[in-house]
Amino acid sequence: MSQWSSKVSGIIDGHVHMGTIGGEGAMLAIRQATGIGKMALASIQDPQAGTGLPQSLYMKARHADSFYVFAGLNHAEKLSEGKVRTPSLAEQAAGFARMGCDGIKMIEGKPTSRRHLNIPVTDRYFADYWACVEEQGMPVLWHVNDPEEFWDPQKTPGWAKQRHWGYGPEDAQKEDLYAEVDEVLRRYPRLKIIFAHFYFLSADLARAARLLDEHPNVHVDLAPGVEMLYNISRDPGAGRDFFTRYAGRIVFGTDLASGLTVEEGRVRAGIVFRWLESGDVFRVPEGADFLLGPPEDGVIRGMSLAEEALTRIYRENFIRLVGAEPRALDVERAIAECRRLAGVAEALSGRPAAETEAALVAGRLAGES
Image 1 (cartoon, helix red, strand yellow):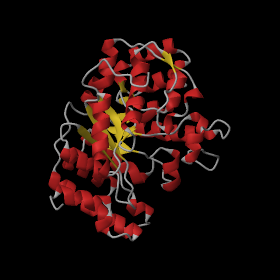
Image 2: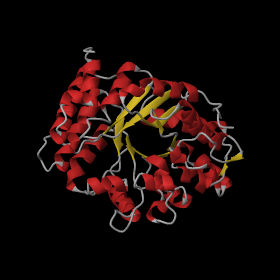
Image 3: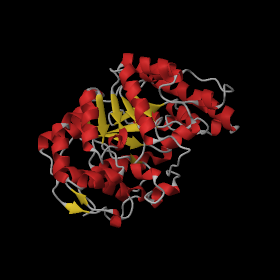
Image 4: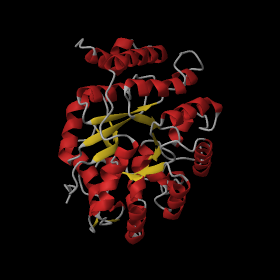
């Protein structure tokens, strides 16, 4: 049964990725096929390519009622050792709010990102940013860590190795990354944080409970990490109890992407729907995207959550944190930002700014093509 559909309407997916604007049709088709009402685009910036944020702004401009934008940070100045000038992180956050973005996406905390930007999130480099985000009340969708098995070469899945998501002693260590986050939460207790992928605590629900009990503004999302499904499926009764108790602190997410086929998107969303809503015992269906791994990797046991819990997880928590409707986009500010990002990309890569996705989006939004 690869085409499981949710029985709940008005679902908001809090964790989706948009590729190039050429994927607009695919993204719309996936949204329709999955029955998801609205999507939040997690926009990780690639400063050298001029991608990540521009295409999300494009979708927000084109489909204002359907797409929220969580804007990623741009570290071009730090990575270029000052050769390229960019706004400070705090200035970027304030600019995102003025532009009409709905939140901030952080990949800072994933070990692969730490390889490129080896700066702890407790460093003074982030201090004004954290203060700004806390003051503005902007929600942050934050990827911290990765599955525990990624630090064990014998257990790292093949699909993860293909993406160089296997870690050794030279990489940031899991507990060190968690300790940094603990310090950020201590310093800035009013931050509204949604930790992506269940904060990679699905194998330790007691620890996840302590996190939520100690930090009332913290939430976790359900974007797979297929290990989350396997871990919680070891004791679906305990999983059901946790999800019932913390139904107000869990945000629905799928990690859908415009690069998936419609069938892959339907399967990915359907797995999470089925896990939450049914009492079925099943495996990852054939036709799933490779990041979910082969069907023989493990058994998934559904939790058959009550409708009240499902409604909170599927939409009410996101609405409380972010809003019932996406914020209106200031198109002129979005155009200016895309043109600035195109210039940054040219300075870093030598590729003409006009050839970047950022410039293409700016032109489309300005009605130039």
